[in-house]
Image (cartoon, rainbow, N blue to C red):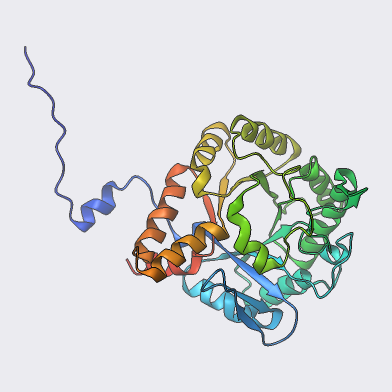
Length: 325
């Protein structure tokens, strides 16, 4: 029997059919909204390089959480701007530090919201590096001890997930051990397992006031040319006890997200970073693109690449869009 040549046919797709056969789905619950917390009271300052994103004081977090929940976004990640900084970043683990107070405020305002905390020292050191310096160089072992103290202080304040973003060697194991020793076995670690030394971070460093005062972070962040190294870094974090693996940035590293998704059976997170956000906002402001549609396409591409969780400054906007479509 001779069969006719097979020719795939396009289905006429109305909205219901298009939704029925859609391969990749994105929901507000998969999004995490980053919040920058600043000293003072009654403060809400827009970040010039990140239109639509604000630094807020602790007492304004109730309003932020309400906006997130109304958009269907049930998770946030907190970044702190302390009142003072020092060489060791001691404000990161202060009992009454800005993030510790922010966690408690959010827990009171929105008990059902999941709170992720950034665990790093760059916002708290007066030199802007992600760790403590010895002879002008970041000292790995001293740093991971302080990072573990910081993660523990966040857990004690009520954080649901701690997220070390420093890229020091061995920090996941140190944090896991410290949390377990203090009966915080159930607090997961979302590790910035694959964090590249990227030029897409510029607006974030303005927002968090954490640009290095000298040198750069290439000695402890990854070379953008390397992909096999990403698998090695992620493997080490898995062996040390990471519960979620993150890739940062997202759009420029979709191939890395895909490789981690295929290689590991842990949830994969991706950080759609400040520069990626700012480019869309700037082009939309010029009228060169449809900002809303490009936002949606971009975040869908991150999800399609294999991310289970997306950290994005578009979280509230995208959540509202998804709820209304």
